Amino acid sequence: MRVFLGCICLLVAQATAPVFAAGEMPVEIEHRFGTTRITETPERVVSLSFIGHDFLLALGIEPVALRDWYGGHPRGVWPWAEAALGNSNPEVMRGGIDVERIARLKPDLIVGQASGISANDYRILSKIAPTIVPQARYGDYGTPWRLMLRTLGAATGRAERAGDVIAGIDAKIEAIRSRHPEWQGLTASIVLAGELGAYASGDNRGRLLSELGFRIPDAIEDLQTGGSFYVDLSEEDLSPIDTDVLIWLDPGGAAGHIRELPLRKTLRAYRQGREVYADPLLTGALSHSSPLSLAYALDRLVPLLEQAADGDPRTPVESSAAAGLSP
Image (cartoon, rainbow, N blue to C red; front, side):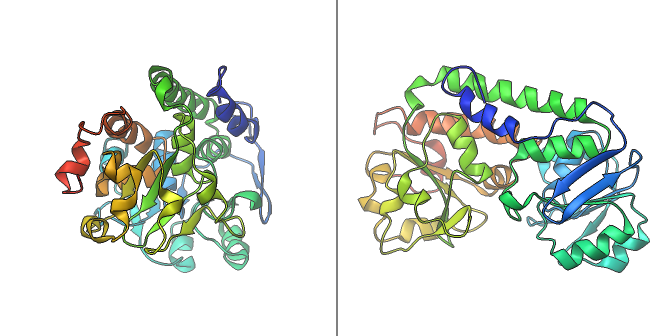
């Protein structure tokens, strides 16, 4: 995705994205279940994707309904998306897919790129309105965020705006990377505490670390099976995450689990003060990896990475110290 070494990742991601003319209609979008044709600019969009509402809001589109992921937010969006949602009050859908409820909303586009929609779900939903699902190669939840946004931009007649949003975030990532040549090549792992699993480079969380210059170790990549983006770890073997920088994701109440891991003290990141603790809000922002959450995530994450990767064990990582994780 860039001109120097860092640009490579962005170029690869952009190369996978379809090229659409701004505002072009009709448009055809290919995906795992076939091709969806959209003949007119949609006005009533239902988002079944757990993160799709962030992408629509980034394009200036207020969905008539969205699907809540987690977090317990009344309107189904996290703090970084509240301003974009404004005074709108979309219907918030929780749990599984309720076809009858969706039909009553009379949508003219259904978004499901990160939703777990099955072939049968798609067959039924596509009779209600044009429905967008992921490409097969990315699985249910692995679509790169840039491709997701470009696809939605095309489907809603806002391809140019999607490109502008992407360019703004790319510029932010580039600026951070250029300021930190010392990060280039350092290994990093991003680990979900509690369940204890690590994200591979094919996940948006892992992709972000790679774009900043870090490298997801082979020990994590080699544990992937069947195109998975997440690998389970054992408390009896933490060697795959024995990396230069270790980011602990806490979706809620997992700090105690981190402290109690018996082999944690054997990790270099622990001994050298290179652990970053992501509280539930930062964890949510990294997990959404949306055009709205990434700016927030980077603003909070970068200072913590600077503290963790400065090579001085005496420099505390503020978030880890606050969570009681410092050596």
